[in-house]
Image (cartoon, rainbow, N blue to C red; front, side, top):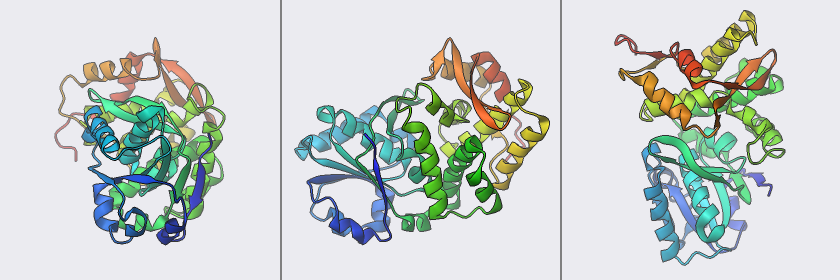
Length: 338
């Protein structure tokens, strides 16, 4: 199923759409900021307020959402309308995908990251036993509504998370989008549309992430390790940006790219002021990193990793031990680092 993506010039336009029965799963912070503005769509309708933290992206909170569905007599034709950032969309979409074997689903992302990544492509997930996105499904939403007004209340750190995914897809394409964002780091509708278009070009030919779509995981194999090691104090975008630096380093060491290309990749990441190191006080971080890599969804005797190759990216299988060695350049245990 292909999601219909609609850009809304005004949130009030939602009052004219989707008269079907709905219930809402909404990020608590978004609800506080937009309660009055969005009252037109959720007035007199059940709302589950979700505190969007990585630790709450869990089976226990998934169960709470199921109780909410039961209490409100959700049917298969009921629309689950999720509003929030990636964490909220991921758990709400997973709940929708398995409750009564699948309910109707509409997503309205409220973050830059959610607009170009979490809402697009049909992946759903929760974390389990501190492993990132270990339990999930593929379940594209019927519709995705995007309104850029939400970006006005985002912090600079939240915007940076979205830029990490935007830079990632731009580096994979290595074309127009990369040139655009290199010239100006301003979020625009055209940049969001182009990033979505590029992501969908991979997702629509490989919904279940078995071949070409895996290229979208650039930076993520390393990034998920770093997120977990930090106990999720490192944001997803920060971890992915560090993961791209690690991927560039390994690509250079494997003679897949030149030193010039390696420097170009890092210079682009530097333009956005992404971190260069992750500070860690964990003495046995390498052993923990190995355990995480062995539980990675893409582990097949070796880990499936996306590396840079000349002007594009390539899918390679690399041993967990080698990946941890590469991460040694990213994880720094000196106490004098910020």
